[in-house]
Length: 141
Image (tube, rainbow, N blue to C red; front, side, top):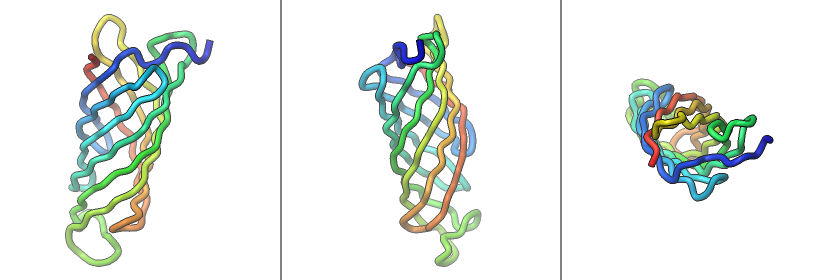
């Protein structure tokens, strides 16, 4: 049984810890598709991303699944830590993201835990690649 019932919550909010630490909100449209919005800090900059995610069962447990997705981000960088390639100083970049990860619904409590990789590619404001992973703990409702 590979594709069993997946995400068993409608909404979740939580803390994202990793290369891009911040807050995460996830809404599942159904057991296979959802949207995640996040606000985060990276390289002394502040960013936001929105991802459409597709979920699939993993193994025989209804509480464990893997997901992948794609979306976009905008981030305001501090030029002290990363260069735009154009000049010094703060700047804003816009780009595309992909993600892949696993999520576990913790039995008996309204929480889920996930770990993911989210490579991102800035295409406006800076031309460059950034990759980061994170652990996310969410309260589900």
